[in-house]
Image 1 (cartoon, rainbow, N blue to C red):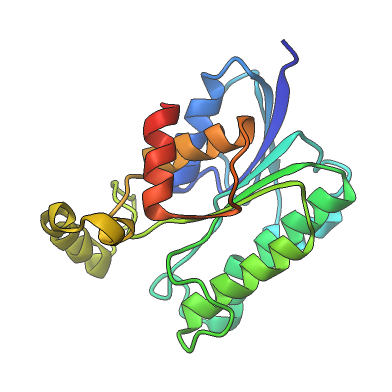
Image 2: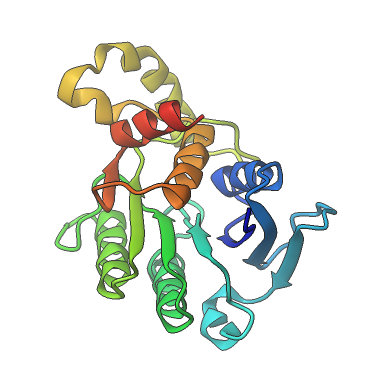
Length: 222
């Protein structure tokens, strides 16, 4: 079996850290390259860390070589109130990563977006995600998948009061969301990570995946 090399952007985040642990246990992957500002503090022979300024990702083209790229970068308005910096994170980093994929002939790019992403939205966060998706798709990377999860469950290191309240409410409402409303159910980051790995190793007939589709893929891929 030919073992692969994967790149993760955002491996210290909630979903990215789960994804990393899954790839470390996956025999299909021999190397995992991590690009980020902070170390994951894990000693493993598979891991190579590139501690860099992700805003300058374009300057690391020679190191940015793999079979697949998983982009788990994202922030919130509460964490990043400056809109220019917010856009540099949620739009700039994934767009730069997709451009490097194209330049280095990396044929698989999987990125986490958000429900409601729309380049024409009047809501700033949704607009930025929509613009990011447009930039990623413009690179025409053969195996591009954009995941649009709803509210992501799981426990974060930092406290987000509004998000915590939302999670509690969604845990009550989830069972009421059926049929076409399933895509609004909250989703656990483990499901997102599982779906990302499945998509990297299988073909799917759509590039943009709603939250209920992510859930379905994760269930079948776990």
